[in-house]
Length: 103
Image (cartoon, rainbow, N blue to C red; front, side, top):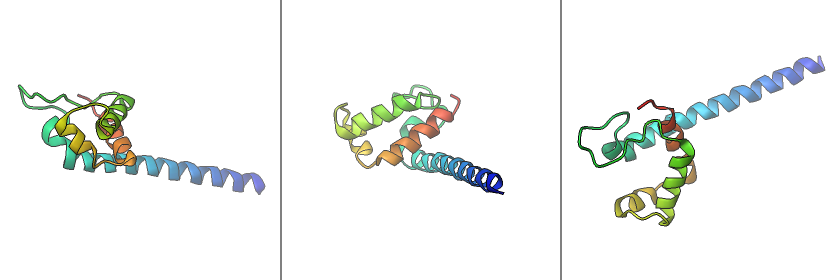
């Protein structure tokens, strides 16, 4: 009985962890739609766009870049203002969302 309860607790923990990860992707999608996609697009941008496509970029690169913009150690008047409104969780969610997209 003890082994069954332990197995049930482990299964419950795994389900909660997977639901939390899925929620962060959906939160990242919502933030990207509201904040990022107007300039960067979702998967592809229009021809001649001056903004980089973020789909498929490495999540750690995106997190680092957004934190640098937010902290103003990487300078861009537009991106510094936009990133200033993002929390660490927002940045993580957006980076995870874009990293999972195929360009």
